[in-house]
Length: 329
Ligand code: 9Z3
Image (cartoon, rainbow, N blue to C red; front, side, top):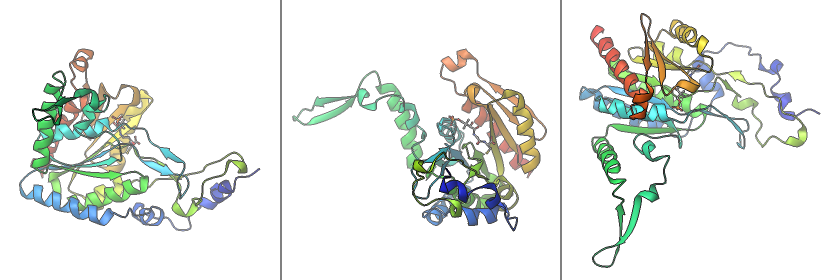
């Protein structure tokens, strides 16, 4: 029994008569999100405004991409990421004086509110009767110090317009918005940093090969063959934002190959740094690899117990490296 979907994407049908560049593939195989142009203008204004004020701007990508298997999507392939790395890093970059464009997966963790994602916020609130008999909502004494601290930070960032959130869901959204962001940040040159922490799929099904409707289980077992996602780091570093400070993340599950893979990525893409991490230990250990250095950042159990976050160390390390990069021109 053959699934009609399988027929469409057998390896034979994947041969490409003309080798397309990453950019060519992007425009051929990935649908442009409807809000791409509008978002690009917002990002360009944001970068110009903060760049003119002498502020550095970091584009953080965060969360996992979603790759649909059907045009009218019922099923999709998801890359794992809670978004915590990106969301907490955004807070530390803001603390270090950066303006932040936060390109994140819809509903993944968000700066500041992430601190309340594991609790029921309603448990922190109490309903009381006010002096004129009207309902009043007050925060529990226990929760008050933390909420006050976070709210103050959040409101200061909001009032100063230092955080621009942009959402993606699918891999197509992500790729197009990354390109738009790179072009929007290009005019501020080396003041721009790209901190690519999102977990991005390596595989996809081109729109032209995708079945429109839900794949039917009555057609039998499903065999999926997917294409390799074009590596956007190449045009980003070479063409879209050639003066920017670019950091990619490398995720492995086998610690023994991490360093080699991180070095290989640097060799291929010629960007400034790779942050390597292993899935199980990512909250307490990363290695920051640059062409001439490699620095291990480690949190002890005691530090983790006190609430120290490894993103604090990653951001300090990279902000310092960014300063050197700017000075060296
Ligand atoms: C990472 O390695 C991030 O550190 C994590 C953070 C996704 C592990 P969480 O969001 O986890 O805090 O739960 N991101 C990059 C993952 C990735 O897809 N890297 C590609 C690769 O490893 C290169 S772009 O090949």
